[in-house]
Image (cartoon, rainbow, N blue to C red):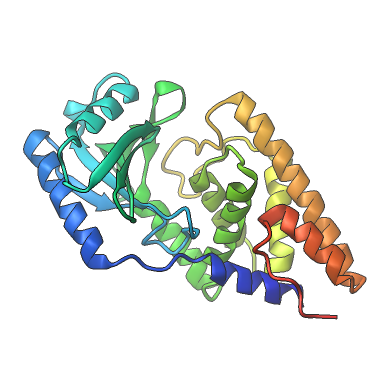
Length: 287
């Protein structure tokens, strides 16, 4: 069945784990340096690499550098510039530092690379820590990384570990076509969809998720936890229009792939799926 190819591809997308000792040594050096030169309380791993939703080839190690809100500048761009400057000399192996809001991307002579977000503690809501991080338009946005990771993991457990793999599939589409949409937004959309379903069937739910992306216009969504005001999809209206067009094209391809599957046409099925995911998508064995 078509789900077999999607399951196999989702497994293929999972990156190989980096050497933990390498990650730890780099993290410790950077954390010590940041704490010495700023008011930061330290680094916390926050992203998809340790969360099970990273895609191979796009699997930098994500951290948040926590700061007290009293040290938060007026504009996020200032915080990012300051953090980039602070990282100068933080580790001997750093070869590059550049800003890609909301992160400072830190390149090393060898993988893994790091992405560090400046995060300013706002307080707690429903016993969940809330932080302010750089958002669109050089404005501050609220973030609850631990709460959102917990939400995705709970939905994943509810469905027998099937949700994080489908998140990887949706992200793989983003990377293949270069859709200018937030990976975090796609993860939250997917998890929110799965939270209302009684079962997950990759073939069916993938089409449903893309249909939701199209029907909602690739616009900001409500926080499933009801803690932060909105979760932004894109950084600009132009990017929203582009990402929406690409999502419509993907949905058309997924529908065509399903029709090809029902017609037992392996070639047409694979052609449609490769347009969504690229040449690495496995050729179907059914038929």
